[in-house]
Image (cartoon, rainbow, N blue to C red; front, side):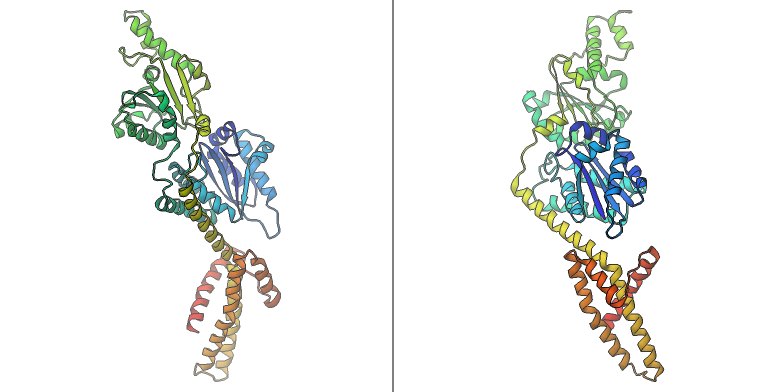
Length: 466
């Protein structure tokens, strides 16, 4: 049974999403070990979303509620949040609806900026992380692999992802009113991950040429070399920060990398530098503290800080520095544009059709073990009758041919009905009917399933010969 617990910009506050995102790496293994019914867990965590996709091994008629509540407790334990608070916040998706939800998420239909491009890669990397942690299952693998295929189809067949939509680009659009000329704008980029690359591309699309990069983890030099920009060392970051017209932060650091103290220290260092450079002067002291990158630089009067990080990269107190304005994810979310209905409707139609097909395939898989058992039952009886016919001297093959043909005819209608009932959600009626009429019970353990798969192939070959 597939279950999804979802918290997003639609039903959760930014503070909660920040806490959940910061601890996402630990959530999957904790959920997996929390309850015996949980066979697998894949966590999707983005700047506006935290979702746990679970594969539960619940017996027929057994309630999944205890396993779900334990999963919520596990998430709360690693995030430092109360389970009661999470239960009232999390959305709950189950059964075939899980596929539709994930396909929609991966296609960007549930994002702050509908059609944004980053989410498909984030969903793919979520599965990769679950694999490395050993928390995925065959059903979750199929679900996530299909989600990646559908997201590519949506992008290729609709116009929803053709404009390079992203939170980064929306943030820069919102910044337009504060920027006189992008070509003359000095930018400090804080971060070197995938989001940093997208941010740099979006800045360049607007004509920005003066970009420097700083990395709290020390990767700035490599990123700068790969992208043809200048790296900023740790000792120079304060001065670089206050001399930039725009600061864009997009790191995965779990602490603030830009705050009031940094900006005030940078301003003090630049002021001291401009006052003189004699030994013992404020300028020399400022350089010794690593606050000055270039004596010719000056602090800008108006400065925009764009915080795209989750957890937050920028402390709220930066707005207490005169001339500094903060644009964070919460503000960006408020100003997200309306959907373009034509492209969105086409994308949702693709997602809906794919989800139905995925659900039908899973429902047919549910009756597969019983179908294997029925075929084995019939062909065991067939083999016995053929042996008896041979022992009576019927060795010209006509009796065997007739018996095989009859077995194929007898099996045809039950197999068709199994698929019909599975697609109608009534596979239990078919399974119970086999048990009541023929005494046929499906295999349950892994070894029998492997054997059953071989029997299915053998049975298909027999039917073709018949």
